[in-house]
Length: 479
Image 1 (cartoon, rainbow, N blue to C red):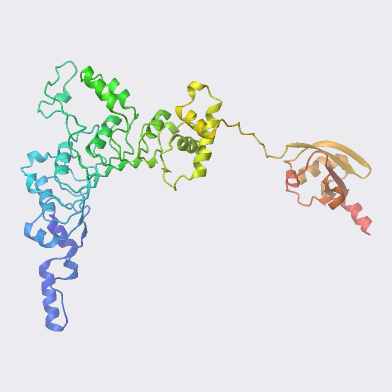
Image 2 (image 1 turned 90 degrees about the horizontal axis):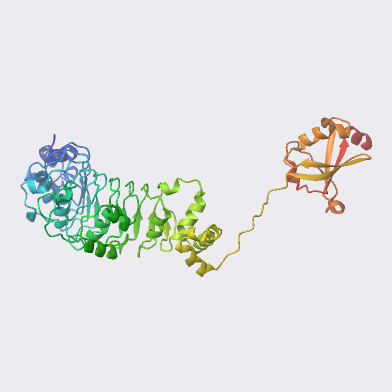
């Protein structure tokens, strides 16, 4: 497997061959030749995906080639040794973006024989660690030495919980003891107050099997200035933190539990959050949507593909209206443009009418809030604009006249066939003229020329008249 230096030489060429080519050119032509071939200049954005890179390579060569690199993408390689990874990063002091996704980084940093005090990435702003199986201890240590980090990707790492900072620092694994064994009695530390990283504003946590919102809240406590959070494709069952706490059986004392319940809410740790993606989560009740409305700064929300939408009770338009009405704080819902004033008002009025006929016990608190804004609304009149299916029309053929009920969804040709017994001649010889009862004196009869045209398109109403004539008789009269 090649080193990073070897992968660079394969992609950008070797030094020796380039120098010899330059020297030959200098002998033959008197022109300026750069000291280093443009092919040998490693760009500030360096992408070496899927190159089987396992080691850093020669340190001096790495410094010479990569000192100016600002963005490094090493996804899908064979990197699994922290000394090699840190050796690569240490030689690139200008790094702002690093992607190490799909490398196996599960080895504990503390066992790697590397002192992180020698490393500090003062320019690093974006770190991507998707599908690396990196554990929380490693994440915590890396965060401690990344003071300028703004965006962190931890998707697809099989995290069932969030342990950026542990409540207990002892080595007894007390959090994993089986039921019935004594729990650790060492002092607990408040994870809400420890290990804060004020610079991190974006976290991607997609595809992790975390199911408790309480665990996701720990991300908010660790990153108090978090503005952008993606937890799509996570089986989060509810945003009800109190319900989760009560269902755990509880390891805390009664006073500790009561104090925590009083202080914590689903949005307590997300005071700065503006964007939240909960697509394909396990949310199944409107109560969770109501909880999202309490997030103080939330503006953009994505909440598609949840069990709540599996019901066929609502159309897609009705579902969007019910969501908008419940979320007065959200300006953009499931992508697209911003929710304008007219759409929000229509949604809120539709919400009132949806719940006005339901029992009071089924009405959410938002219903009363909207009634105070818009007042009690009258039910919408159900206006059916479809034409009547059957109308009564007078049919006249010569001196014979008869009133019949007629289906207006039939075609002109169907009507002619039905009238053959009454007219006494075939449909092929028949001509029909429509007479509007209101326009009889103004425009006269209108010939119904098109055999496949449906009758309702003539706006026929009860009381109108249809005159039947024979083509032969018409031709004789003209003669």
